[in-house]
Picture 1 (cartoon, rainbow, N blue to C red):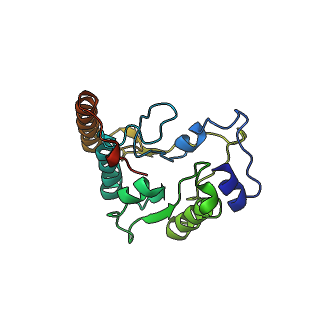
Picture 2 (cartoon, rainbow, N blue to C red):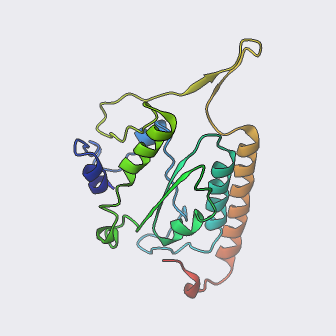
Length: 195
């Protein structure tokens, strides 16, 4: 990812933590979500077709349906691309590329321009200040987004999913966990794995 980011933003510097801590992006509203959330070490797609895809699909569907503002979906790899086919391209921006893994990144990911395209779309749609600060050098401050309710309600709420969305996501997680447990108990058919 960092090579692609550097191509889009030459001033980009990888984080000082040797590359892995992406918390600043989460603090800025970026959600990174794999199609499958678990895997056996060194066995790509080892937990495919065990329920995670349903959970991931539900999260994507909820975000696409419930967010009043458009969202940028960056689908990297064939399994991710399959998850965003129903996303409304009039409301949201859908960007697809090969997966950024070392095995496929050189086939188009490094030059996909997704980070810059995302910001261009956000600024065009929502104005200056809507872009994502992709910096991970540790020099930028955490941005907290709060909505203050009208005075008559005397309540403030952090921008997040509403209670209905939270309940739906929890139900999707529970369903995925049940599917995961069922899959653990049944023999795995390796012919069903995704790329």
